[in-house]
Structures are given as C-alpha cells and as structure tokens.
Amino acid sequence: MGLLSLFNREVAMDLGTANSIVIYNDQVVIDEPSIVAVDRTNGKIIAVGKRAQQMSGKTDNKNIETVRPLRGGVIADFEMAQHLIRELIGMTQAARAFMPPALRMVICIPSGITNVEERAVRESAEQAGAKEIRMIHEPMAAAIGIGIDVLEPEGHMVVDIGGGTAEIAVISLGGIICSNSIRVAGDEFNENVVEYMKKQHNMIIGERTAEKVKIAVGAAVSDLDDPPEDYRTLGRDLMTGLPKEVSVNYKEIAHALDKSVARIEQAVLDTLANTPPELAGDIYRNGIYLAGGGALLRGLDTRISSKTKLQVHIAEDPLRAVARGTGIALKNFNKFSFLIR
Image 1 (cartoon, helix red, strand yellow):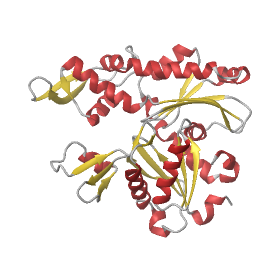
Image 2: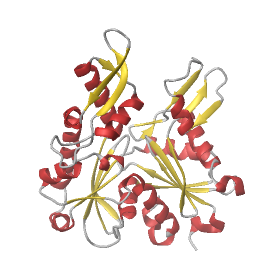
Image 3: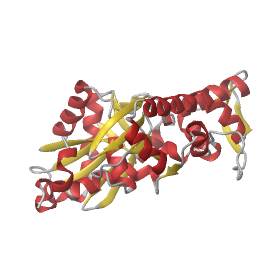
Image 4: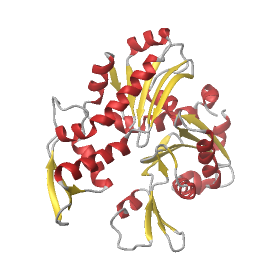
C-alpha cells in the first residue's frame, strides 16, 4: 500500500493557470476555471471556478473583484491561491469525509519553476489544509497520462501547452533528460486575439471573448482541410464606443497567433538540439506527443511536424492528460515514488 493511499485520503491536483482539475478516488471530481471572486471590502470569497468566471467583467459592484491567482504557470497571488486550493478541496468528498486532519496531495508543477515559486505552491496547499504535499513535474505527469512507459530506457518527447506555459521535455528512465519551459501558451494566444481585433477591426473584446474566438476558429496554419465556420464576435467599437459585431475566420486568427506559435516551434527545436543522440533516435521513431489545451489548436500538430520532420501525436483528451497522469502516479505511488518530490 502506498504512502498516499492510506484510507483513500489522497487528492491529485493539476493546479493550472486557466483551469484546475482535482482527482479523488481515481475520478475527476473537480474541473473548474482557476478564478476567485472576492469582496474587496471585507476579503470574503464570493465564488470560485465557473461562478467566479461568469462574474468576470460583468458585475456592477465595484467592490467585487475577480482574480486569477496563477499567471505564467506560477502563483501570482499567494493569498488568493490559498483560497482557490481550499475551495477546490472543499468541493470534494475528501473534505466532507475527513478534512482535516490527514489530507495528502500530489500537485503538478512546471518543470521550469523556481524554488521560491515551488515553495509558494507548497505553502498555499499547506495553508489550505493539506498535511502532506508532494510535487510532480507537468511534462512527466503528461507523459504518464498519455500512456507512455516513462520507466523504460527509451526517449520520448512531450510538449504540454497549458494556459500559462508550454513545457517541452525529453523523458527516459523515469527522468527528464532535457527540457524547456516558456511562458507562451493559452493566455498569450488570448492576448494575441485581443490585440488583433483591436488593430484590424477597431474592436475591443475581453479575455473571455478572446478565449471563445480561439476555441471556435483558432488555428496554427492558414490552410486547413476541414476549416471551422466563421465566428461572430461581439465587443465594443473602439471609435464610437457602441456595441459591435464582427465575423472572423480561422485564417485571421492563424495570422494573429503566428508569432506565438513560432516561439513554441523554436522551443521544440532548441530542446531537440540538446537531446543526446541515442534519445534523438528514439524520438525519430516515436515522434512528438502534444498535451494540454494548446494541443487542440487546429493544425498545430501539422505545423510542428513540418518544422521538425517528425511525427506528431495529439494525446487522447489532451486537456486532462496532466491530471490523469498525476492521478495514476498517486494511485501507483510505490512504482512512481521517485518521480514525486
């Protein structure tokens, strides 16, 4: 029996910049946006997750503020991160059954996280009520979630594109041989869309609308075999200040995202250039695996494949690959104990 499986008092958490996923008893029980709504007058938490997201930019109460505690894959607001973790844990059966005193957690962290940032994650979880916290790097969790046997002496490259960071790692024998972590991911894609709409259509849109545009017509290439229908985007006219509707197509958004996607491509190439030759041969045979929400960007696999001349595979349910891998590592703690810090 693993250390973390005692009496089923274990929770696996993918604490993401955009969304947080909690696994309890081998099942995804929480999948919520990483957003907190707080009353600034008294510091009281009003809502978290989807309810808080619905309030973002739509409340007439100036004292209600919506906060995203994580930016660029790390904690930007320590106090709000504590509230987010506590509220997410509170939604689970684990909390109702025995929270506290003996809740144990495994949390995903970016491979490029600093010691200070890692300590902030750990302390946030402790303040939220967890008694034992372990960490696993996101690329390793993604690889496990994809179904790769990370303990075998064979090289695999995983590209995990989340909300705040893109994590590129070469994995073999249970270790990350070389890696690259850049803060170019879903949030920057949204910013690209906001900026494009402002410059090309004289229209101001919010972050949530940009996210919807990205999902509806987002693409990494301007030539798709099965293009999505144009998307009617609502916002405010920059000149008149009046509400406005503009129809955008995937080619426009591919142009808007081009520079950010190119930076991810370059990070993949840089990581390949630092890969030992024996492992490079393995990657040539096995290809590159994409995980995270960014893997759903239309044509991204084609673009990376064209750039690297390698096969590119998109993980099954890429949004939950990291969380799934964290849950597997938690369930098989003895097998993966040396991967969890």
